[in-house]
Length: 378
Image 1: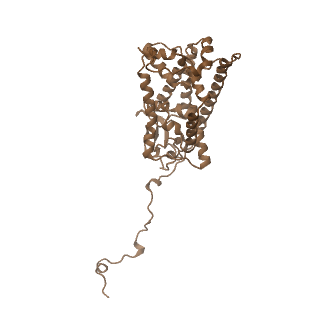
Image 2: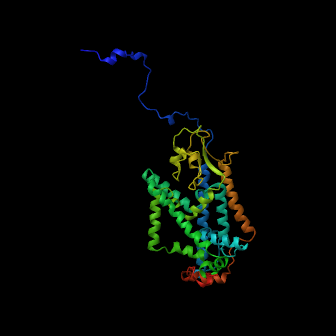
Image 3: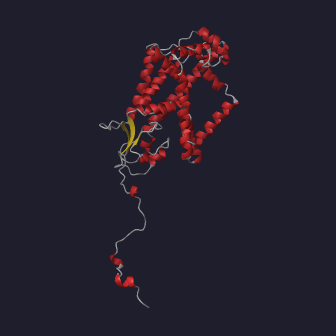
């Protein structure tokens, strides 16, 4: 039998002379050596403490406000003053009052705390990302409790398909656009007329009654949101909250950013898996998204020294911002602005008790003023 031509031209090389070659394809991203962090991360302990304290404060405010409302509804002896902090649940009133202040230079006498709290949360978002959403907001805290409960019950959370996730995230911006349009179309006189209407004076009572006397449709909506939050992280915040959308746009101006150092990063992707906003932290150098809440979950999960941190975005600085500085900054802004409003006498709404005695028992009769109403025309 004839020898093939190629074996005559190219002699066989002994196997002992061949280099050892592994047929397994190595992942170049997995070759980095891990240099473990030496400092213990306390960011989540601090953040969850803030969340719990602020949630308890809101529960206390809600309880006091309920007792205050019942005093006027039943005629019982008044034992507690109206807590102005309840106006934190009136963000639209805060926007209207802020515009009124910008146009007139006068601080409104009705629901001024709503304006000062809005300014506080704007300031926090401007300096410290959307830290209000992940550190202070009671709705955000309850939402986080729900998805963590879902993790324990179902061993995981679920992420909506990208083709559906993107348009759903746009819903909160549509809602925000509607409210911004409604407020921006009002003149100072129209805002004053709205606030001085029966509905405007007891807008806080109307808000309480919405939850006290939740109808069938409202109950179904709340139930759907609760169930959805068990499966999808921060369902309400991610897709439907216009307040979060407003603060997210404001946070784009923040000097703080989550920054990843590729030289130290070991590409384990733990940061991306931990991110409640489903941001690809492991693929980016700087997180600039309006969805970033500054929760520091990604930083807490990173095992590599110097790979991921919150830092100033100024190119000349790139200074790391420790957890204590972020926590202290949020507290200073909150208590500083609220303290100023209280000290200066701008915190409490100026409504006499006799007017509350007339309006609160008949709150269900107060109709929301419409743009075409005579009182709202210029």
